[in-house]
Image 1 (tube, helix red, strand yellow):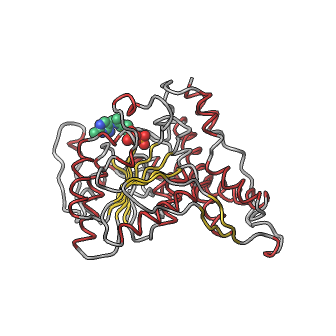
Image 2 (spheres, rainbow, N blue to C red):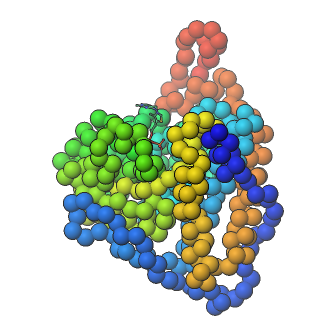
Image 3 (tube, rainbow, N blue to C red):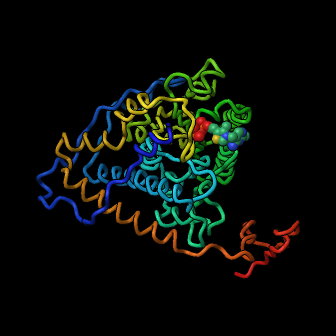
Length: 389
Ligand SMILES: Cc1ncc(C[n+]2csc(CCOP(=O)(O)OP(=O)(O)O)c2C)c(N)n1
């Protein structure tokens, strides 16, 4: 039943093509405005992020485009999955787009980021093209991991994936922060995890070390199920994830508002950069689709999902910009059309590109690509991975 709901919610509008913004003159639009944002809750901090955010027309259109690209890309993935062209576990990010996009708007391109298997949104914001993402999903050569990673493992410069072991990315993210500190760079590390990962023992160990060593790490908890009855609520009394670091300061921000995420992340980034050590940023968000594509569990009702969709971060930004004359309906329609065209082209490539050849499959396992003979039982004994690049 929930799969049916999810499919219906993930419907794709039919694509048409247009490639420009509203033709009205620049002066017709409000160029900059300050929006009120929800006040963040604080833990161990006297001051926090501001309760307003300045947005320019250009910034707003860019944030909208990024969120909408992630949304449309996922809708295409849903289609490809149903056609069995994407295989394995595949995890949607629908509804959570403001988190990845807001974080990216606040950090530098050369700051580091690591996340879980729920990787497609962050892959895009970290610079991977829609084509490389979809082609990785279908396991073809032109994918960002050359077709070896599939839906859960994508990487880019300063982006460390794509990790299947719940919570492990947080330890790795702290390790990256240690490297930043050791090398005296002013980069920070952003380690993203879900509320489910928050009870992992390794998180508490990592928080402890990060606090003692004052590591420049922003621990981002995407609390994507903050309503009643989460698995965490059943297992634990404390769902104040921003307080879970105890001596580590924390912020709880509205993860359905891209501007609130941006301002909270800026605050967290400045905190780390100034040498004060780690900080926890809890983003209260909600995923409109199931845990994985075509999930059939019924742990939440259609009514709950529909209620949460009233907070859709994409509609919200669009509404804010329309109401204040920062953009027109035509602007948004044109952007939608451009994205749909890009996604269609990417998908065509993703299903026509060849798969990696068998004798190349075991290359690229290590950074230095040493020649590697994989021994084993039939049929994998046939695999001989000797780097031919
Ligand atoms: C160590 C470990 N335990 C269990 C699993 C199985 N598992 C995969 S996803 C998941 C739920 C994780 O939820 P959360 O961290 O909140 O992230 P979300 O999927 O909601 O983004 C579990 C238990 C796993 N991959 N790794």
